[in-house]
Amino acid sequence: MMSIGTLDDKERRLLEPVTSSIPERLEALKKLRDAGVNVSVFFGPVYPTIEVKDIPHILDTFQASGVSELWIDRLNLKPGIWENIQRAVMQDQRMRQAFLHHVIENSDYYPMLREAILRGCKERDMRVIDAF
Image 1 (cartoon, helix red, strand yellow):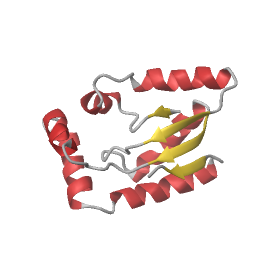
Image 2 (cartoon, rainbow, N blue to C red):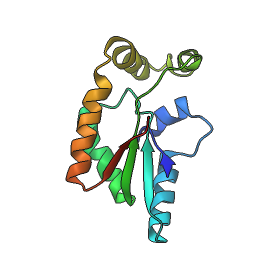
Image 3 (cartoon, rainbow, N blue to C red):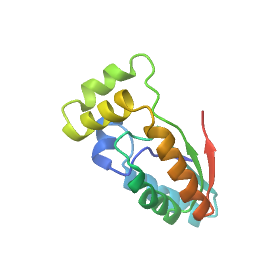
Image 4 (cartoon, rainbow, N blue to C red):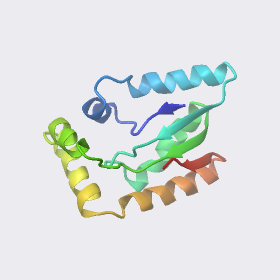
């Protein structure tokens, strides 16, 4: 299982600066699949910059890497996390707007994404598990 919360590597560098790139993670999944290993993705926390229209492309990308199971979770702002996010991303206008809109102003963003994920996974015969 690999943890992937976005396909946008620029965003990944902002929030997860010392982790492997998204292309590296996807390539590792393909190699494991080719070696006969069942692979899955922990799609979480789902970045607030992701929109419902992005879900089909994300799921297709995961499926092309051999993923047959997806664990999902919302972004949970535990104590100290918001301060870290502010330091990391508040200078990036797109990320700042996404966090302010989706996380603070609109608590319905994750349920909408979750429904799109469930529909898309059903269409692709991918198993979905709510992680938490």
